[in-house]
Length: 254
Image (cartoon, rainbow, N blue to C red):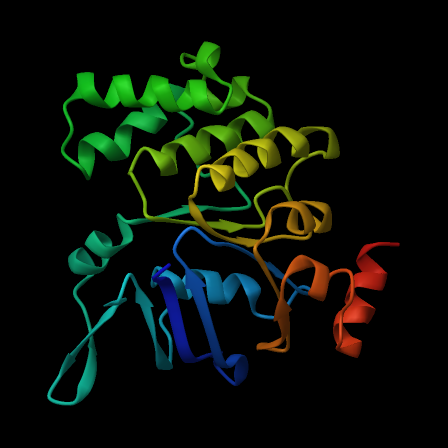
């Protein structure tokens, strides 16, 4: 399989705080990569650099062999215009910890909005696609509900449907279950598991070790802005080689 994401020597600082320290990672097409690590290890920052929600200080990130956020001119990289970056982002779906739904729009209207405004689909086409996707995430009978009428888990599934409506080649999940009550987590993970089984390329920042063990092709453990260890779930979760990985897992799996 070809490479979907290639991060090469990525550095990112916020002021004097060096968050990503030369991080490199390849993600194959159709692969599910779960990134583990303690808070502050750089996981979410790295995820946000993939679609240029965070600018990188050096290095390069490619999605489907296309350089993200920059273009090379005269031997130097120049940041692209925002509208061109937005065009690149269309191929990359992202689901955040918090659902970021429009409170004044129904579930269906939330899923339709980007299709109409960004992809230029007709309202009828957007509605058909939206209903199909809400049905896919188990919310076909909640199309007319507003976010305040939905549980956190249901709102997160609407957010996933909204991302899928843009026909992404890649899905990024930034701790999608961390803001949910424990009893709501399973439904969201079930939707993500279904996406993985259907071949969606996914990079998932998560503390759900069971999900990573079951679904991931590759598990990455990050600490202090670097990748400490990566490999199959059996290698990284069940038989970690690095002491920092062992300590993290011991704390999480208590």
